Length: 322
Image (cartoon, rainbow, N blue to C red; front, side):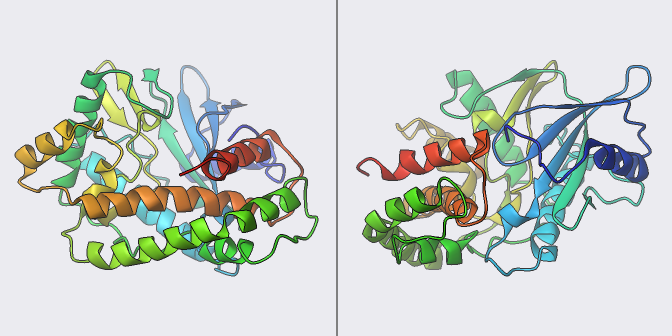
């Protein structure tokens, strides 16, 4: 996220890092990287450096009234899987450090979860297309290892975040004036109601088919922005979406369009990716982005840089032909 949470003082964050991990945070520098979590570079005494990640549990709800303990539990399970993967020797998993109580995630406040990571020196990449074929093939190799790892995690139940908010946004162009994007978003969603309703129906149809696919441990978002190149090779970061799921969850956006990556995956694993299940996860990516943006605009907001980015994302999906 581009801006730190207004309701989270740096003093609170520093104190919880100290209590949770025994790290004396001499300085906290906000790092506006990625779009979904909040990040700080943490410096301690001497040469100690860490990376703190705070997740807004309200953004991870499945419905408006879901208790925040539920998204916290899902997030904790995903990070625990990354930690277990790393501890099994799969060091490409950039896993959080266990807190003093052994957990990878602590409850910072009722609204926020906090994880602490070792600071990784390496080259970062932007979301989007892989910059080179070698990068793409390297990530394929990581996924082949990941999908064969005997690590337990929660299973994908194919529920969508904020589905109730997304469906409600399609019903009326009128909206309560809770921020600068509330009414424009309401008009945009109702103008595209038929398109979004069709996507939801197609998603539900494909989900029924996907439930019969074998499940493996998946990262969930292995795009270039969630990779780093270190002196020891590529690593995968941001494991908050890790789940047991069909392998297509990690493959739908990896192939360059010529089938070469999917063929290589089948050769390496003996599992042939199912095009219908890849379509499912492509649709889910779009619906999740739409739902998160809509939920934010149906709640009080002030027009921050993050709000502007959410509006840009919404327009990118809906203000053009599909």
